[in-house]
Amino acid sequence: MAQPFDIPAEQIDGNDVLKVYETAQKAVENAKGGRGPYFIECLTYRLRGHVGPDDNIQGSHTDIRPAEEVAAWKEKDPIPRFKKYLLENSIFDEDRFQTIRNELEKEIKQAFESINKRSFPVEQELMNYVIK
Image (cartoon, rainbow, N blue to C red; front, top):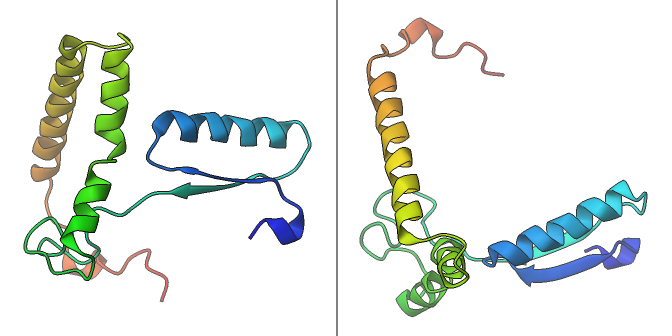
């Protein structure tokens, strides 16, 4: 898509957190340097379904993709890959991950408690701020 417009472009592994960061930095430097846009195509995969809890890996396998294909891409999940990198390079240890996990669980629990204390909107307000 970028080639006809003479825009620099790169196709990268969109599940490699560090590669995405590095390439995005290059694109930012390109733009800040006055060299215009930079096109990044991140090859990745949608693990979850589009339509609800029974779609794809959340329930029964109802989407059209073969289960083997989904499983192969699940192995490339960027979160476990990045965690492995951080552990192997002694940037984080399991204790640090557990601390972060605990903090996130606490924050999520507080958010749920906060939202559950709120009342539902009244029916007359449901269409407020909706462009018709």
